Image 1 (cartoon, rainbow, N blue to C red):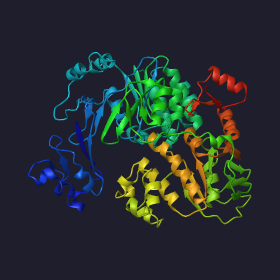
Image 2 (image 1 turned 90 degrees about the vertical axis):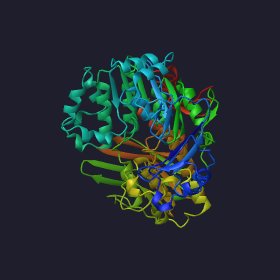
Image 3 (image 1 turned 180 degrees about the vertical axis):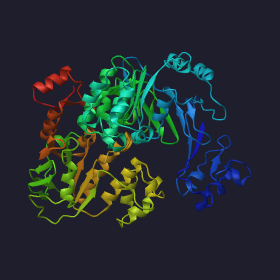
Image 4 (image 1 turned 180 degrees about the horizontal axis):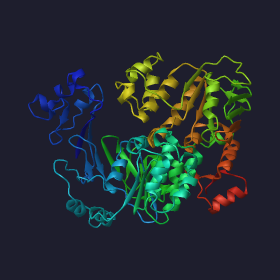
Length: 588
């Protein structure tokens, strides 16, 4: 069984002269294996393609994938046209449970939600004919999805969906936050959601003036407030700090006691806390995706991190993600790189106080704390973009800074942007340690202004690490990245720090990312929007214990070494809190 995909976004047929067609052996022998569609882009006949791979190698823009699939995948769920993405399998909503979907972007997770919510009719792989519910229901007779899909087909099910892209909300709704929430308050729970998600100060604000984090909280509240039979939430953590993520997770868990909930999430700590079962989505992004049967949350996440699915006997990644215990058992001996002096920065209504400390050569220093507490201001003080009222950076240090919010300016391609800041672009090390793990090869010819949020984030990380500097500061590098990209990020950053002998400061809200990346920790405390204090750097155990105590959650490691959030109120949670150990009890 074989599928072929032409990536329309990457195909530049007018520039390359369609070498993919010229060198295809079937075309040269007269067969119509490759044809040109009405837009001038090549389309491969999958029935005639022999899978020689010549067109894949000849395409200079990596716009073609030809993949032979296992014979077991003979019943596709949905396909997006000729040479289009194909999805196999669907997750199963379960009454009174939270079902998670875990996988990379472009693997079919959002398509699953569209199908289960009834907004997309699956064509069962036959895109040439209009799909109908009779054929769909027949396909799923005898499966766990039969009854659910029958209710969707009969129009007897109400669904509430929180979309992935919240920036569309101001384009779809006008008026104030309160007016939108009143329209969605179908369960009489609105006051609880307004309080739980700290939406009170925003109620009179126009929707088009909200920030990303404010829109995210509004979207979650609007979804949970509806009276529905099933709830689907597509990524709840973007733009939220860890405190807001935890509060949203508690509200969703409370709702799931009476209703089935399906959630797509890339923050593994939050997914582990929320989900009862997990469906793994694997395959090749934008080519094909396979949704597994449900697994227990612990087993599913551990298998995903290992890269091997035991029941399916499938290896979808050639390396496991390992949480290293050595970083928290003791500190490595490193030379001081940079002394941070005590500093104070004041704005109208907000004051930041930095206690001072040092950054060491070759280490990665994590920074944690809520939004609006001064973390980004701290980074800007170190980078020289802000001047403190008290204290001064005495040392001349070269700093490379990736800001929290990235803006694409100009029409340069990704390759041109990277070449403008480094002379090492063509070197093997740069190709293998920057371009390859950050997944930038396929977008090198794309204009920076045309990139998605995740693509722009990866380019921003690469630009920061490409400059020659003594200190690298990355503000929320995991934002907009999918789970597969997040598990690769720590290796890229740690290897760069070691090789350059430079310091790296990482500000992030993903606890897993901070745990994998950091050797020491700076903890921000205070009252968001009023005052903030930077404490540390601390050794990881001391810093995380302090941070998690403030957060009110406890962490443990399971046998694989993966950190896990204890269920609130569980025996382990109560036991660790009573001992004052919020960070890591090893599970036997």
